[in-house]
Length: 105
Image (cartoon, rainbow, N blue to C red; front, side):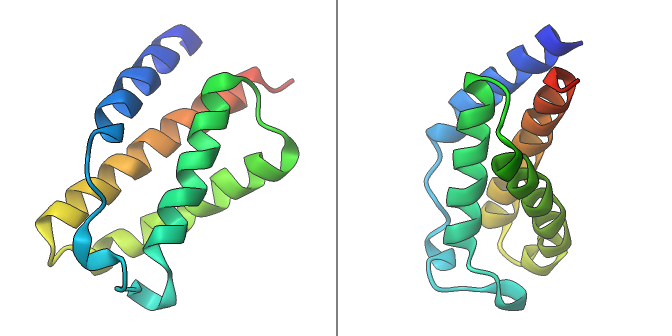
């Protein structure tokens, strides 16, 4: 399963990297959450997970940000592009967490 997850993660991340950040979300903060920071935090954790097992701090950040983004997704449904963008980010983060979890003892 790890190889399939890793392949899906790499393909999804490659496609995601070519997307532009939703312009209206540079200043929009659903439920007080800065989406620029959310994007950067998850992106950093995903990128690190693709390079190998995460350290404990990044592992905790990845898992907490996945939960938080999941809570925010219903709040941004009014913007189709942003909704698609952040749903994809969420899916990729889940793949990164699955890969990281599989590498832990």
